[in-house]
Image 1 (cartoon, one colour):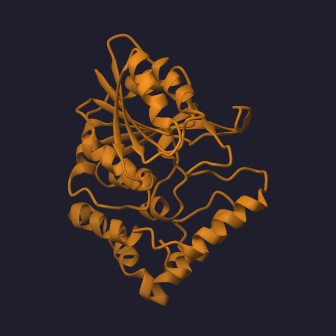
Image 2 (cartoon, rainbow, N blue to C red):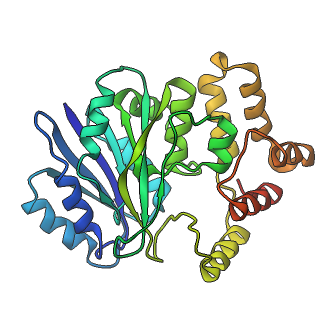
Length: 304
């Protein structure tokens, strides 16, 4: 079996070696693990570190050097250029994988040929990997497209997915999406399935400089204010465009209510009635009050 790990780096010199070491430690018998890294225009020593690791690590490491596109479009380039494999993983540059991450997902993926995505739990940690909390997604988690598009709580770093799903994502690959993990999850929801692993397989590091992060119980007002200013200044996140793509690719086999929801999302930015329907839709639930307030604000401002 071939396993391909897809990683985007940007100014990641501090943690990327530890992350790649943890991927290397995940090698198992009769499974060939390779790593494809796209560097998103780093201005520190990230490329130098990657080239040293490429020469000494026991797994094959290929490095793509590119201009700065941002994390989402960088991962889309990785999807586009991913070598053929049986199983794929997204990897962040600053986390640490638990030793049986690959083995756990390999065991599951042998049981199905569907375009599946496998979602594990994770330990939320500080910069030195001290565990702050544990996040587990239950096997009984109910999914909906609206939930995935507007309040997704599944991070790319906890995902593994079959070759069949990668091929689906490559069909009419968009130039931009809200996030690569949302795109993968929404595609699996429409044409395959989402399976949850009820144990943590990643140390998800929060260090203040993450490109993407997660809410913790600690209220960091500086971080909240920074995120607030980002919401005000950002362009729409291509959610409507992704909804239109999903309709075009999978609308013919969708239940009518799912199809209606996607049509609602497609034109919501210019319709007050559509915004109100989304604001009070019971299919969208939130991880906390801050997430709810920020989502409401982005819907009203047409930022999705």
